[in-house]
Image 1 (cartoon, helix red, strand yellow):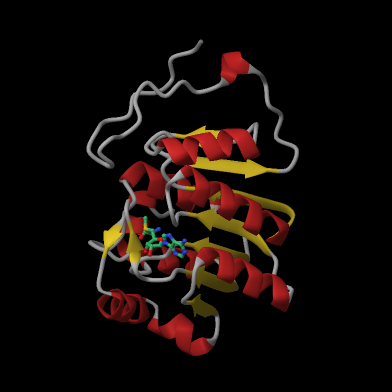
Image 2 (cartoon, rainbow, N blue to C red):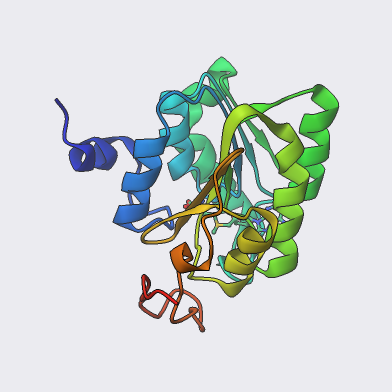
Length: 212
Ligand SMILES: C[S@@+](CC[C@H](N)C(=O)[O-])C[C@H]1O[C@@H](n2cnc3c(N)ncnc32)[C@H](O)[C@@H]1O
């Protein structure tokens, strides 16, 4: 038996991802069994490493210029880190980086007929970004697949888009949301009430769980 925490520490490269420990635990727990994975928003490719440990084929989509939430960064520097973090899987063809906007990435993958059984959404965090990503990538979700993402509750745009477009999504503290076809929306008494949205981003604690 391997301790999840140690396993993650060894397999996700440190210092270059934006995931709090509980969110990494969640992701590692939901990932087994998913073979074709699309990662929307990869940054330095630390999570990508986790995805390639489970997936047979992984596509990362990122324009690698950053955004208002992640911050704007040097494309060359971040791409070099991404490529170093994932050198083996890129070389073997298991992993592909689509360096383009998330909308262009969805169109390109659709053009190729790619579908995935896990789609991770963590690119733009404003409502129009997240809703466009959900709409654009949902058609690429294979039957029985899961769509999930980061920063529910932490960013109002994420929370609003997921609530509107994917009712019944499950919330995994700290900030992971997860949806698959057939999840029942149980009603307002089961909805998470986020007491605070992070403004400015990433600086506030999230308090959740209060029921209506
Ligand atoms: C929050 S970071 C991703 C962090 C990554 N999941 C991790 O934990 O290491 C968001 C990334 O999405 C990318 N991004 C934001 N909006 C995008 C868009 N419209 N198209 C493509 N990439 C986008 C940014 O360049 C940034 O690298």
